[in-house]
Amino acid sequence: MAQLISDRRDVDFVLHEQLGMVEHKSFAEFNKKTVDLIVSEARNLAIKEILPTQKPGDEEGCILENGTVKVPECFKRAWELYKDGEWLAMTDSPEVGGQGMPKLVGLAASEYLVGANPAFMLYSGMTHGAAKLVEEFGTKEQKAIYMKKMFSGEWGGTMLLTEPEAGSDVGALTTSAKLNDDGTYSITGTKIFISAGEHDLCKNIIHPVLARIEGSPAGTKGISLFLVPKYHVNPDGSLGAFNNVVCTGIEEKMGIHGNATCTLSLGEKAPSIGTLLGEINQGMPEMFRMMNEARAFVGLQAFGVATASYMYALEYARTRVQGRNISAGKDPNAKGVPIIQHPDVRRQLLNMKAWVEGMRSLIYLNGKCADMKAAASTDEEREKYSDLIEVLTPLVKGYVTDKALEVCSHGVQVYGGYGYIKEFPVEQLMRDSRIFMIYEGTNGIQAMDLLGRKLGMKKGKSFGYFIELIQNTIKEAKAVEGIEAITAKTEKALDKLLSTAKIIGDRSRSADMVNAYSFAHPFLEVTGDITMAWMLLWRASVAAPKLAQKAGSLDRAVIKEKADKNKDVAYYAGQIMTAEFFINTILPSAIGKMDAIVDGDRSVEEMPEVSFGSK
Image 1 (cartoon, rainbow, N blue to C red):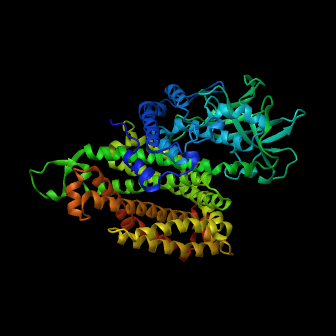
Image 2: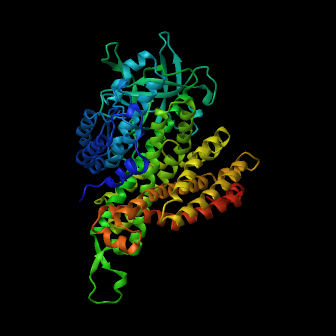
Image 3: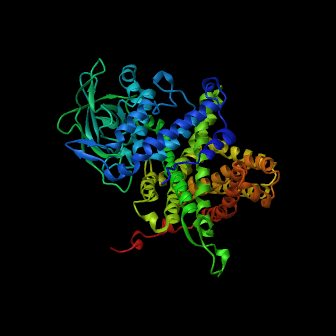
């Protein structure tokens, strides 16, 4: 079976034709040749070393023995190669051991690495998030002890937030911290659903832990953040005694079997010692400073499995011969054809293609905003790109993970009965994809964040930046021959979104707020639909002039004739037709959903609880 993850031609299109690199002295060395080499190296590592761990990692899973978790054996070599290539900190400063790559380039590389095995890459993602917390809030001593060893992958990292009685309601946590005479803290409590919480890939695991210092206020205002290593670290950097962070269980999950999802007990039989990270009672604001990165990583994971599912489904549809072409009618001599010739299979593939390509552009744009923020010369510019990231984050995390599951479901359907069998890769991809709608705040929480925070943030100024970008694309697209109709339809949908946002935003700040929040997820979905239309229209506006040049015409008959012989003609034509498909056949449903939001049906809020059903 072909080894498939992503469409390299499309990766290059977004990098070099749609978005382009940020021009700044700190990124000067990352010219096209260098960027292409980095992506090629990531692709090679992904296909040759990480992808082969996906199926055995799923089948073997993780094993807990006497408090120690053993990961699938095949992960060990892949982790060493990943470390040796310094991929974990590729977008971080050389001062902390990173390579200083633009975020945009790092995302292109990570697309392959994550798509090859999201369970494996979770160990890296959790470590990176924890290391960024140390970089952002650590003391000089904490940074010297932990940072470079974490960014190198020599030591692992996690985030210890969730507790049995405090899931999304983090303020209800019961983990406590008691100040010791030497300035350290004794941490006591139980944390659950901790990805990569215990494993044997690294010599030490550093746990950022949310806990309440004795005497601190209730709720989120009294939460502090602590660093609790699995093993104490001696002054010379060597490892000391075990710190009594005990793994008491690992979850048997639907998917991502290769990553250990742990229950961790701290200080049960002996103290687990931690040091304060940041300021007392500032644990939640500190953790949320890193939350955008964590949520963007979840969106990347979902996109990674979605693009892999699409590539597998496309390859299968091109090679699986079954049934005659419908245009053959009752011709008894008609032969079987590849299923990509059947209209419904083509419809499903176009659904997958539209979402996958739109996701890629959105995720990369979010990364480019981080690069623009880093390269900004004024506080005003930095604030603008920071605000854009804030608005894009619930879309990257929420909408992308929702649609990734749909893409993976289409992948199973294209395979038919074989798609439901473990022998074929799309079955695992669909199982793996389901968790991403839950991680780092469920998608219901992402929807509430978009409606309750991002829509009205800075009196609408932040959301206004987002709308302005879409309007700029539409304005430029109006000057492009061949895409006039889809440009007009996208503009109409955007106008509808603006009026809908005004209505639901006002409603959310009124006595009707419960009604507004019952439509928070539909609002996230329609905002995502318009965002996909924007991404695809943007692509089409870039592709259309190039198609006219390569084919010599925008006439469909001419394009069809030349597409088989010219890859550029085929690719650029695909961009325009994918945009047409989405905007003409999927976007109209968003108009209907917006009508429903405006109408504000009250069933969700008025339904008596007993009316949902009897026991």
